[in-house]
Image 1 (cartoon, rainbow, N blue to C red):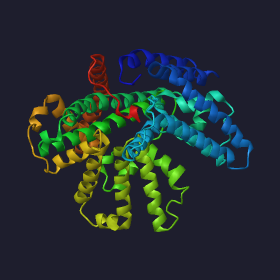
Image 2 (cartoon, rainbow, N blue to C red; image 1 turned 30 degrees about the horizontal axis):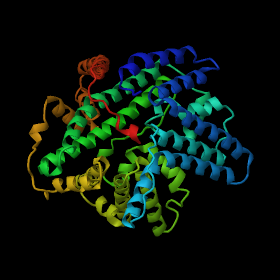
Image 3 (cartoon, rainbow, N blue to C red; image 1 turned 135 degrees about the vertical axis):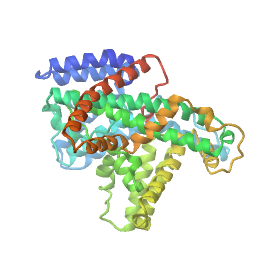
Image 4 (cartoon, rainbow, N blue to C red; image 1 turned 135 degrees about the horizontal axis):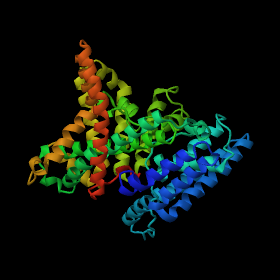
Length: 477
């Protein structure tokens, strides 16, 4: 089940909100929310719910073991078992495929390939479980006595299948002590609708265009068309994932939870380091707290810092998928992070802001090619089209344009750089000198805001009800 589906919008969500408010002061409220989260997952994954609850049960008992032990043995066992589960279901086929590639060159018999279905959200709920074990091991919190509360933390439906990654220490108190209010509900509802609109109006429209371009032979693309395709994908990915995060954060607020922000206008960044402070913040914070700092962080020699960055971004790429393309994408970001520490960052600081922005966008956009393309040969061919090496034979930008794509493209650029809020500030500033103007602007803003969100929800709901193109990119991670 996805948030932008009719069954979620018009059945699951209303029932969930009704039950949440009816049980808000009842001792069974977490149990009710857990049952709803299980139904949410089972609707799309069926029997794979058993794997998730096997993981929850395993971590529940290991957490209790950690609480009674003074050694590192239980946490090490827990980490190994969690990573083993993730490795088998997400990376086994990739490993066997690469072993067979080597065996073929050695003229040896290949290993038998076994198809293993990738459970939706396994990367997210595994990282939730590891966060719990490490926070308990560090004595930041006691082991969870309630199996229901731990299970709810791991599989709470707003953040179950595509994040944001919620660390145990950020939510443990909310599992027992949270409140529902009309103000919080209103904020959550607006946030949810905004995320739904970003997903349906911008990401889906640009995604259709990006898919058409990436399905073509790169030799058929002019250089401007290749650039248009990857820019469309860059915005599709951002509005797809940030839209999902907005919906998850909004749903959390409507249910009484406060999740941390996951995006802060990453395309405004002026360095790759800043980009990772703004992009998928929950993943960056997770790797910082549970890997980079334990490895020594910035407190070690420069050589060790560079090695730590290499390890973090190697695993960041691998976390996104079992593919050489994802590894290259992660290592490209790690490479430029290291370059910035070696001196490029100081050069950028002395450069005009426009140069800093262009440098960051070029690195990010080129890296997205590896993230989007099916394999390494397609990635390199597409980049060749971007820089004008391939022989152009076919498609130009105008073949992919229509009013929907043009609107989504322009709106995407404005929203990517916080242009919407900037325009609102300009409107209020221009009206500041006149009480009458202020009153008019205030009236228009208050009522216009309501109309805007209502119209956005109706349009988005009608669009998804019509069965239009509606993927969620991050579901595969």
